[in-house]
Length: 285
Image 1 (tube, rainbow, N blue to C red):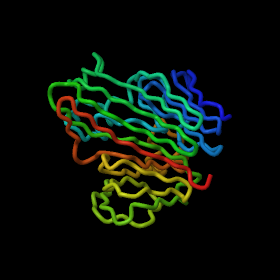
Image 2 (cartoon, helix red, strand yellow):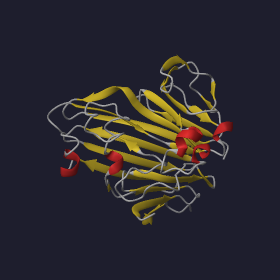
Image 3 (spheres, rainbow, N blue to C red):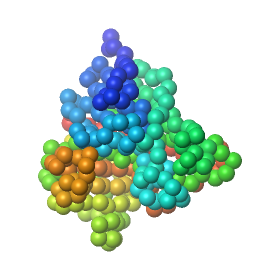
Image 4 (cartoon, rainbow, N blue to C red):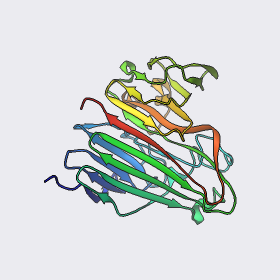
């Protein structure tokens, strides 16, 4: 009989966290700070990139893993002048529900509601949830937003996933071919190539494709249609050298492929709910 999945309290670099593990060997570690997924091991390999120089003080955003960007993406949002970059969700502590554990599946849900601290940035009542589903070879993250206020709630955001790669200059991303592409570095628009490669700094926003993407023919990446965009980012050497929380060679070991809402905010009426997910699946483990 296969043993049930486990979930235990732990401490990661000084931060309170949970480790969820399957008997198959898959495991995920998530910090309460930011509901931040720090590690996903599947097939005996770490699948996420976490900067060894990331600030783990319980105040700053963590570099790497999967930051939750809410209620805005970058500086785009209805209150951009008041909100931190990528919003406040990655800078505050979330609360965890009791885990749901089975033999081949585990679910951990973390919640964030408005508080006195959050009200300094964001004047509305809300509840956000991050649902983390782990099964053999698969990690799915679902962000849910519930407008508990009497007025409409407008927001954007992303699951800002940092994927581990052996060498980004040799990496290939497929599945976005033909999708509208905006290169934020040159402010130019084009149609995406069938195979995307990374020889220099890369920061592009795509209209999300209806079918999954594939990274290095080893990882399938899909997202719900409720996310309008996919963001692909790598800082390359020059920008990486200016990032205090990244080692000089960190850029070479990571690629961000993000499920995102960039251009048009999502607006929820009073009582309304929205959910968006990203699913990562190991191929040929």
